[in-house]
Image 1: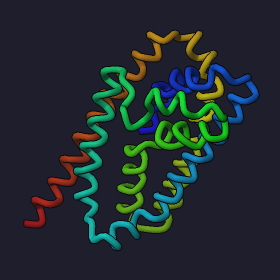
Image 2 (image 1 turned 30 degrees about the horizontal axis):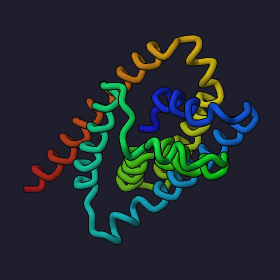
Image 3 (image 1 turned 90 degrees about the vertical axis):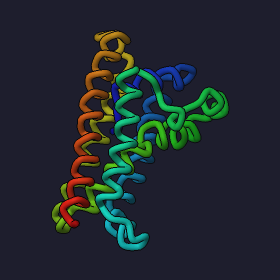
Image 4 (image 1 turned 60 degrees about the vertical axis):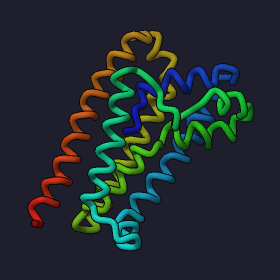
Length: 193
């Protein structure tokens, strides 16, 4: 759901006016911002379900729909409107602000990633599961950081066309995961009756 290969060219375009040192700082702060958001939602996932009286199944179905839309956009190699707009790109000339929003949220950590950690933390039967999810979030965001850092090199090596092919394959996989989320949610609801 964080899609580093699809976001790397956007990150490169948004930060092209900055020096290499500033690009690294922006990437670091963006990843830190996105990580904090995901960690907060990971820790609050089960609380959110209890507080609002939401079932995991309802969140799975809704999450599946969001994932499917994201996967469809990836399959078409498009960036969602919720992720970035030209106005946002023009508005933030300061690297600090740019790193927090729109790069940190919602470009790096969008609605799909937040939904994913809330669903997974809400389904976790134990504290061990939440710790495992937290470790997964940290590892994922660390890898995302290194992909952003190597973004220009990666784009040169495999080219924009290569990055689009990888993004489309990941979009297809994400759509299948989305359908499975919806099936799991519906199956649990049907089995209750």
